[in-house]
Length: 216
Image (cartoon, rainbow, N blue to C red; front, side, top):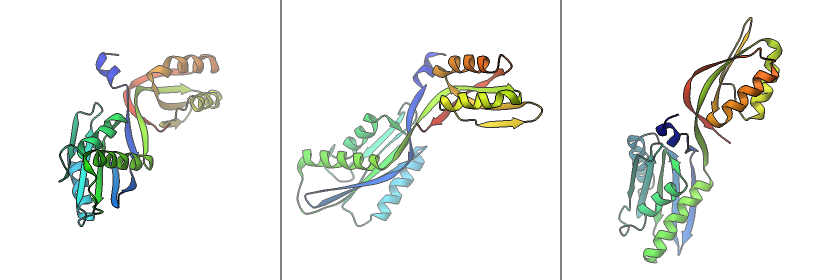
């Protein structure tokens, strides 16, 4: 595996978005988090939140797109420079989550929070939103076709379940074909176990390499 793929072997994504809210000196900070796959999706989401919370004082935003965080943007939306968007973005980058956007809506409570207070409030709001969201790991692995007879199917399925791997496709005819994507770190051990469990009767064919979602 070349260096490029080593860098991309795994990264975290947002599986399901969520919301979180905090109150600081009567100001409400509502964080809405959503998965996005492009800048266009992120911008559309931000505009959607601005329309939804049209009566709020501020709708600050941040997003990260790409496995290596190739694209990042943030906006203070009228708050003092560096007190909202950047701290929000730093939370996303610190959690190493990719393809994610967040908007924190502020309803002003009448009391100024100061620079430090704003940074803490926007940071905490994003963290609250993430608590109510679900993340997953995108792993890069090898796609294998396992060809076996009916006597070996149960043994192979047991081994796959033990390693937390799921069958992505299957074909049951005169023989059986099971397709599974295996993380590089697990491939060698799995192949040895499959060969041993089936007394060498399972043929293992490499079909390619791909990212897959590991919800664990």
